[in-house]
Amino acid sequence: MRVYRAALIGIGGFGAQHVNILKQLADEGSLRIVAFADPNVGASQRSFETLTAIGAVHYTDYAEMLTLHPDIDFVAIVTPIATHKPICIQVMRMGFHVLVEKPPAVTINDLDEMIAAQRKTGRLCQVNFQNTSGQAFQTLLERLRSGSLGKVEHVVGVGMWKRLRSYYDRTRWAGKLVSDGQYVLDGTFNNPLAHLLNNCLLAAGVGDGHESLPESVQAELYHVNDIEGDDASCIRTVMANGARVHFYAMLCHEANELPCITVYGTQGEAHWNYRNELTIRARNGEEKWAYGSSDLMRSMYLNLMEAIESMDKPLFSPIEACRSFVLVSNGAYESARAIHAIPGEFINEREEGSSTVRLLPDLSANMKFAAANRQLYSEYPFPWAVSTEPFSLEGYRRFELPAGMASN
Ligand SMILES: NC(=O)c1ccc[n+]([C@@H]2O[C@H](COP(=O)([O-])OP(=O)(O)OC[C@H]3O[C@@H](n4cnc5c(N)ncnc54)[C@H](O)[C@@H]3O)[C@@H](O)[C@H]2O)c1
Image (cartoon, rainbow, N blue to C red; front, top):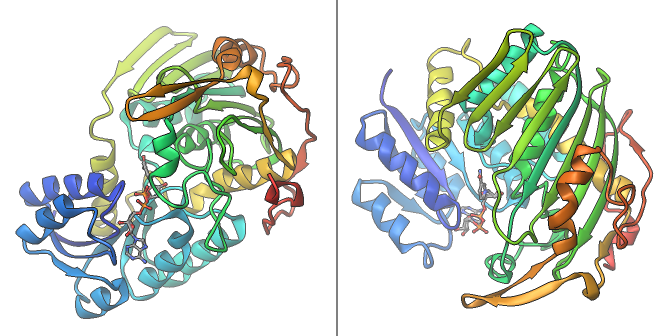
């Protein structure tokens, strides 16, 4: 493979992880980091020094960077969620392949504009849903496509994490539905546990061997923190192939548990988790795979470079494969209509380090039971939960924030 010429837009926050991977790949001789753009490098001195030490040129304006370096092969975009669409479209129109952070877009209308630009420009656009790249998940998709589990009936994803107050204070758009006049919809499934929802939908989407989109969504959204978005949620999705996805997430658990997915087919079941481990129990007995999760982002970069080399090589997470994710994310808000504050009597708050944390012990203790029964929180029922109606995604093309959410 030739030595690729890469550029990075956004080096702060999660950009530091991209700097590490890009530097690793540069040290191995796979690529050269030509330039990077960020208008605010003050808080990212380490990444700034790493990049400039290996000859990457700094710009405050990414368009100027791309104009002055037309020989760049691909650009990684690691900027706040609301900026993905305009930056990604401009980068592709200027002729460059892209690796853009997840979620690729907040709204289905924005995502469809990005997909249209990708098709028109013919550039590759990989979305950094890095949990798609693990060998365990790829093996799961292969087995589902080949029918090893029979017809997929249910996919259940469970994510139980803890996030401190400092997490919501780290950047201005954290926990917001709208920031600087732009939709952000920052919450459990649209940001930290987005990989879990995306992989649930991909697994359900190939449930009968063919790709399938979601048809309807029923969701309940809650928060224990003083944020606009949700920090506890559950979503039921019905796919066009009949498979049902049940997704459960909380950021107010007492610890960070390993997010996991169970796939129930007519002829067996599979368990996959974020450690890149897979167990399948089907007609041939039990099979197990354990690969480890340290190289997932590196695999996303290598996969993009291989696809640039040979346009036949499929991307792990091409932008058009993210339609299910964005449709379900938007549909979840349409179904929930409001993000309900959980009353203080159910919440424990304590100091932790130099921050504080709010926990929801009731949900921590019972979420897995609700998941095992595939019940939404109001069906379980939790005393604080509020029931919602399913929302049809038929012909759904444009997201508007439900009126009940703006004032929450
Ligand atoms: N794949 C993952 O597991 C994972 C994990 C964490 C975050 N993320 C994603 O990474 C993205 C960035 O999140 P973050 O928390 O690092 O955000 P952030 O708010 O910390 O911003 C990242 C950087 O982008 C820069 N930036 C903003 N606008 C810019 C522009 N126009 N040009 C150049 N640089 C610009 C900022 O100055 C900052 O340094 C989000 O999409 C987030 O969801 C992904």
